Image (cartoon, one colour):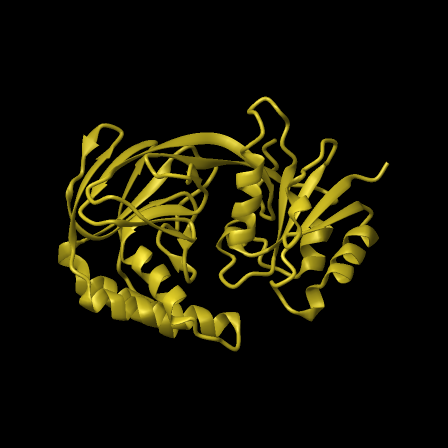
Length: 305
């Protein structure tokens, strides 16, 4: 019996070469039974029992929507393995699992699946937002998300959009002032003034900015990336080097931990690609939930299921 794949597809992502019919054909020709749902129709949320896999065709935001829906299931209910077909702009999640390849190549890898258990971050004290998968943070990144949405600019390609985001980040940084952050990681105080505090579960966020190159979403720890007040010029140079494809020797001050408490002297925070506004001096508590999901990955490591 063929394995059953539920394809959840964002039809606005990718190009004409990644339309509904093409993706279904590729999956079926690889030997799988395909059940299709579009994110434009509410019925995609009805994730039926008996699935072997959920294939998410879209960008990071589409993956987040699917994870949020799966988290509504009880912990004891089995969750299908998740496969990502990278059709978005940044594709930070797909790149974390080496899935930023052609859809044909990724689908072919499903035949001998390499499955990785991955963690998520659980959030307390942010209304309506209970988790993050990529990262949560304060400082210039929430402002970058705000600026990109307000600008509403049309870009000719994902690459141009990523460059546009880096340019805006550099502009934001030049005028942004470091803020006080009361930060505790696993009970230890790391408070100070920062331009950025990012709790990372994967290596990169936003416009493919590699903040935590050693992050592993399955290792049971977060990487907390800090840009202190004294590092404004160094971080600005890092952003510029990222923009032109150069190399910069700047190393982020990084902590590791599982339980984090943050009180930021400001009101804006992001969880993945969601920009949120909180009461000033709100305190946020973050805990790690290990092995919350299973993802299909492509790498040289043996499957750890």
